[in-house]
Image (cartoon, rainbow, N blue to C red):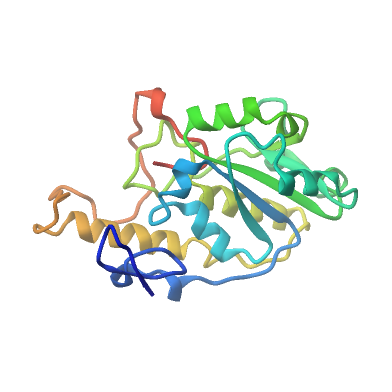
Length: 241
């Protein structure tokens, strides 16, 4: 544990949350064949307490976080891309992408290769677009996507529409599709538990009359969202603000 100088509450050094809402006991770290590289905008990096990118990294042994905006000359990103044994992809929405939801196992195996590395952009929609626009190396990557058949459980945050998932929900969906395609053999049944616990803690806080963010109408049950924000200027891609 450590003490945040700006907030005197004792803080867990691992999950970066206050000790009273630490989620570490719910973390179930496991190995995957696919490596996930989370390209995190600096603004998201500062929001570690509610950011699911950091939570995703804690869950996956074969993953890493790289913070930045323009990755064109990022040494670590270019090291991964330059390795001929890697097959690198960008998880990003698009009509002409390789749709993991609509491919047979043989197609998926042929396309993804033996050592797939999937890059994810972790930031708001405006930030994500800027990151991709500036990063010439990312623009050259083959892109993968999926048909989203689930609604986000991130009920404490706003999304523009149901297809917009948090980082951890997106990775969860991809892992399940890779399992179906026989590219992975990992058990994801507990993967979202830390995420759900984080939401529960936040709801408890919102329902506490002594809280500055007290909201007596908050729904305590974690259910898929049905209402989404209409203002698209602050939309997010894989991570909510």
